[in-house]
Length: 138
Image (cartoon, rainbow, N blue to C red; front, top):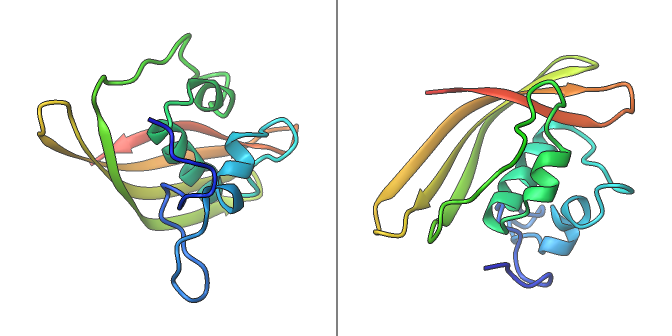
């Protein structure tokens, strides 16, 4: 179920006072208007993709996946609840390549907890936008 636009952003980003940013001020601007507001860097794209998983926005996830690795379609696990995101590292290799290591926690419909630990690779393509390429699971 989608969170209201005025609610806190699922990605967990906070302001200087450690107050959660609102969805509309954080990932919402990218998820809701990708055509005009692309994520400015790989970490912001990764956070917005996590948010898109929480909100079940396959359109955004597919649009931000590098064409060379993009699946034909995307489905979501029924009853899955995303519980939080921890960004562990964001490294820029050069002007067009970056990596983000993160841990995302979720709970499936049966109540079983899951932890996704991944180092994601991102590329900035000729259009100036960042795209998710793939990830290495830990």
